[in-house]
Image (tube, rainbow, N blue to C red):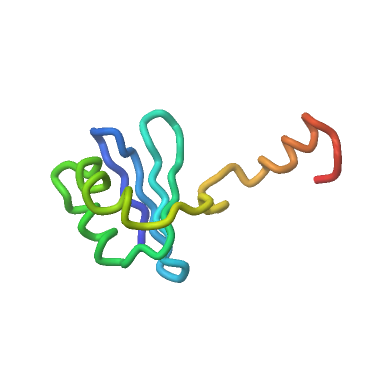
Length: 90
């Protein structure tokens, strides 16, 4: 599934991975929340909701276990940057 961009509200972007059934939500405060075992239909309804944040609160937040955000949406050089900053191997 493609990534869905939102132009208003607290959720700025939603990314769903069909293979892992993981949903990553990118928030207006730059945080990312990941949920595991989310059915594709739930992602589809989130994208079609008039207020995605309300749909998330009602249908996703307490229904699915939290996970780790997908690395594909993060900075690919983040591990190296942390290694350079704190020392160690990267």
